[in-house]
Length: 122
Image 1 (cartoon, one colour):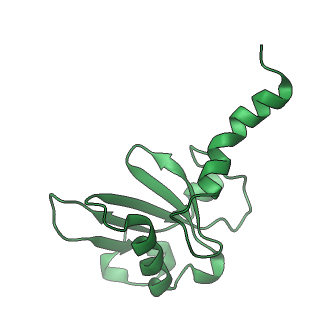
Image 2 (tube, one colour):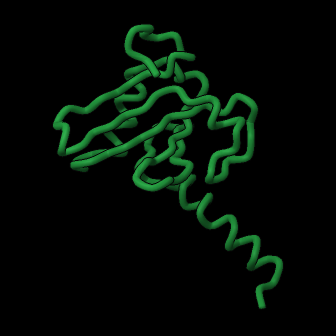
């Protein structure tokens, strides 16, 4: 039988592991979790439109991985971080990054809501 403290710790462990992820090296950037092969990364609001910051984080997380799938989000409403993502966070997608051995070329794409590049956004 689980005690309430043990039950709470069990629920928090995945969040603590994601928050302490050594791959996310820039202050404020947090790997929130994984759904399938896609890592979900929280972007600080101040860097949401800074492409160079994304590239540094991508390099840090993906390193020498052959395949790397990242979705980036902001959290302007300070919703609790959980996986699956709450709607308040999932509606604030900022960009995606896909690198696969099969395609050979990495692809960074802005969300159209970011109003960065109108002709190549999602």
